[in-house]
Image 1 (cartoon, rainbow, N blue to C red):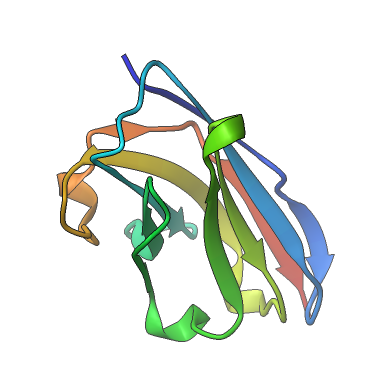
Image 2 (image 1 turned 45 degrees about the horizontal axis):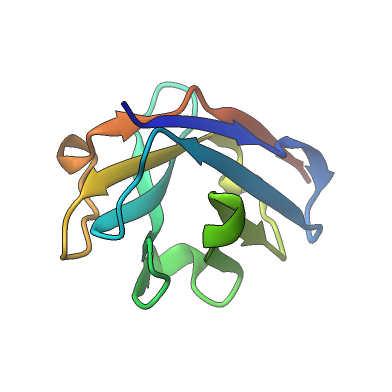
Length: 124
C-alpha cells in the first residue's frame, strides 16, 4: 500500500518561496506518476503539477509555469514542489498524489493514492 506524507507548508508573504515535500513509502514502482494538487476554501481540488517517478516527464498548470518546479529524489523516495514568486491565489491545501500510469495524468479522479495535505497561505 502506497503511503504519502506531505510537509513544508506554512505562511509566506507574496513574492516569497516555499518547498513542499512528499515522503513516499510502500513500494512505489517506476511506472508511477506523482502529482501535486491544491484546494482553496469552497473550491474543487485542482491540478498543479505532475512528474513521472523516473523524473523524465513533467507537466504544470498554466498559472504556475515558470514559478513552480516539481522534482523527484528517488534515493530518498521524495517528491518536491519548489514554489517561487508566490501569489495570494496560490493559497490552499496542497496534496501529493500517485497513480500507476505510463502517461501523465492531470485529473483528480485518475489518482489512486493521496496524502493528507499541507496548508500554504500566501499573504498580500
